[in-house]
Length: 386
Image (tube, rainbow, N blue to C red; front, side, top):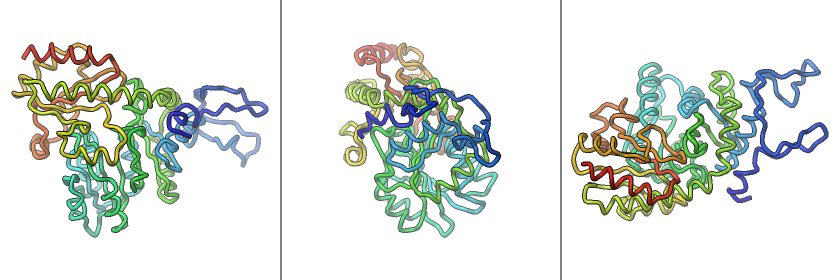
């Protein structure tokens, strides 16, 4: 079954058995608890919605299929998924290697919560070179956390090469696949052990649900994660599960349009005299363009760029934009724009931002699926205000 078909049917198979209602769309099962006829036999395996819910189960089944995984787990947010993973697989004194360019919320969670409160050591490395990852491995290293492309500088890491390093050292490799979605990149097929998404973004695609997920095939790791999902309780609600199931149905068509619009805008900005540089994996000017073509089937809808000038020029541009909503998050059908240093990555210390190349004037765009001519015209009129 091709992914376009999986997105429509997996997890929403109509129940045509006797007593089934034949729903073509998965119902929202709001029940918090489930009655049973026999004391020791839960009805259809359901006891309490934190432990299992039919709507969430349908979503988890689809999520697993999309990443070529055996198991999918859905959580209340992307950070809830990350927290559950760390609680399940790490203990005090363990060491984690992470990309030095990460979503600000992930870095805050790792450094301010797990490092400061639980003494989990974190090493941030430039993972564009796999040798930097291997050089950071210690006796207490347990986990490698990669984001590719990274947020917001769109750096790539070679998933297959780092997977070989992880396996050689008996480490777990986790890849945050949020920017590419399961449509354009599948890290498990490249050797990763666990894939993570903020489903808030492309997987849902409509900016109306917050969620996260983990997908994997290892039975032992799944048992640990499933236990903590239930024990810690950061589960996705039935309503949000329904919303993501609905959003996923259009993932394929959305991602194609996101990419087409992004590529056109990236080329336009690259030729604009008021733009200093454009970062987009689909451009030949991206230093890892060849790697992008190798491990991704598309380039996505995220662009970062710098203007000629500084924060004042960036503010002028951002405050004159019309069709791009000045807002955090990404991956929705509507175009969003933001200044990471002041918004999504404000929690990252300025020195750390500068070390990885995140300037105060960097602008990040999540390109939507509006008509690309309108988006380009909007950017041009805002650039004229500088």
